[in-house]
Image (cartoon, rainbow over all chains, first blue to last red; front, side, top):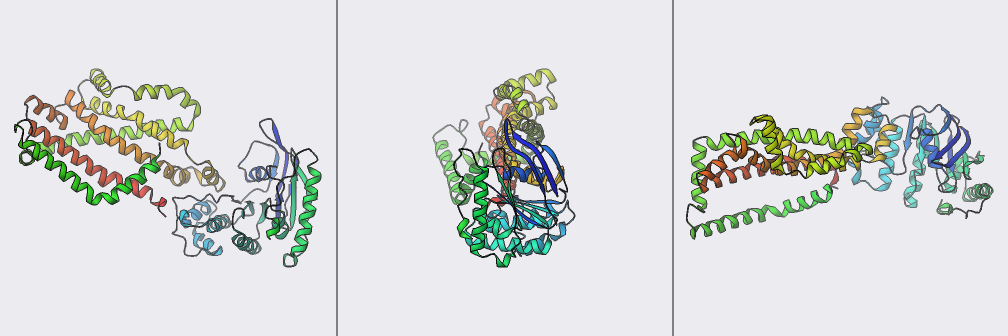
Length: 244
Length: 261
C-alpha cells in the first residue's frame, strides 16, 4: 500500500504536507509523533474516511480499522456487530470464530454495555480481523487501558498479526510501545507535519529488552526535537513510555 | 427532548406501581361514591349506576360500535401523523438549511389551536371522514416532526463512519445503525401522540361526525344524561390506557433492552 499526500488542510490551516509512505505487505509499522500533529488525520485519509485532501493513494482495499473508542453498536450483540462488518466482505459466518480468536468465546450474545473497556477493545479487534483485512489501521488501540490489560492486548495483537499477516499501520503517541511492537517506526512532526524520521527496527521482538526500547525511544524523541524547531513547548509524550 | 431520562423514570414507576396504582384508583372510585351520596343522582351518578348503564350500552351494541368508530379514526390519524411527521422531522434534522428555512413554519404549526385546524378542515373538505382524519393527523404532525428532528440531530457520527468503513451499505446502515438510534424518539413521539390524538378525535367527532365516542358524548350532553357521558368517557380512557400499557410500553422496552446491563 502506498500513499502520497501533497497537502491536507482544515480550513486555512495546513496539517500535512508532502508525505509519501509505502508499506510493505505484511509489515507492522508504527506511526508516532506529538499529540495533535495529524497522526489520526493521516490514518483517516488512508481509510478513506476523509476525502478532502490532495494526493493519491493505491492498494487501500480490504481495509479494517480499529478505532480508539471501539465504536460497537450498543443495540446489537457482539456476534451481530462482527457479522454486520464481515458480511459485506463475505465472511459473515465467522463471527463466533473471530470472537474466539481474541479470547471472547461465548460472548456472542452479550451486548457491548456489559463489557469492560479491555473486552470492548478486543471485540473491536475481532471485528477488524473478521474482515480478513489486507490492511489493518489501528488508532491508539491500547490507550486508556490499565497497564496489565494493555500489555495483554499488545501481545494478543502481535500474535494475531503473526497468524494472519495483514499490513498494519498503528498510530500511537507512546514511543516505547512503537519501539516494542513495530518493525518500522514513522515519526510525524512539524506544522504542517511531515515524516521527520523513518526507522527500521530489525531487532527480533523477543530480544527487545527494556534498555533497547529506551534507546529507540530516546532516538525518536531527539528526532522529534529537531522537527520542532519552533518556539512551541516540548509535547507531552513521556506519559506511559516507561511503563512497558 | 430526553427520552432516556423519561424512560428510566417511567420504568421505576412501573416497578413500584403494581401495588400503588390499583390502590390509588380504588381510592378515587371510593371518593366518587362518597361524593355521589351527597349529590342529586342526575348530577353525579354513583359508580354502580354508571356500571349498570355501561352494561346496558354494551348489550345494545352502542358502546362497542362507537368505541370502534373512534378507535379506527385514532389509528388512521396516528399512522398518518407518525409517517408524515417522522419524514419531515428526519429531513429537517439532516439538512441544516432546510431546518433554518422551515423552522418558523413548524413553530406556527405548533401554535395553531386544534379547534381552528378542525373547523378549517371541515369547511374546506366538507363534513367527511377524510376531513376528520386529516384534522386529527395535522394537529399531531408538528409534534412528531420536532421530536424526530431532535433524534436525527443526535445521530452518532462515529457509528456512521464505522458503518461506512466496513461497507454496511444503505439498507443495513438504516436498519442497524440509524433506526435503533431513532427508536426511543419514535416511541416518545408515539406515546405523546396517542395521548393527544384521542382527545382531539373526540372534538372532531363532536363537531362533524355522526358516530364515535365524541358524538355520543355530545348527544348525551344535549339529553343531560351525565351517567352515559361517564360511561363513554371512562370506557375510552380504559381502552387508550390498555393501548398504552399493552402495546406502546412493551415496544419501548423491547427497543431499549440493550440499555440494561
